[in-house]
Length: 166
Image (cartoon, rainbow, N blue to C red; front, side):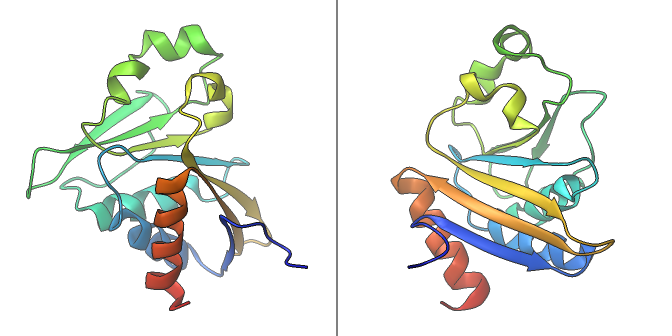
């Protein structure tokens, strides 16, 4: 009996640089309607991973923590897509999500990365890629990727192939 279910992937990184490279691989595969949810303890590597996603996607600006602004928008030179990066830590639910224009953010102009998505889970699409971050040791992190929906199962499969060759 397999440990993981279909649509899941379990990965361990041993440094912030490996975490960033893992994010970059995922970022290179994103499409405009993709929703990536990053959940885990403070300091588990969500923003480092997001920085990698931005680099792999082609952001012209570095991805940093959006804690004080809640939403950062990043562009890339090759097209007019926007990469949205949100920190939902301070949001308390549906009303707060609506107040920052969540419907507009999820309109398909570009992929969306959400840190602390559990705070607004009720307003998120049911189909998405959810990644749980766990601290194992000072520099070691565990990531459990969970794909919900056909698009995200394909994305996770392609990510697995591109990253690990399997």
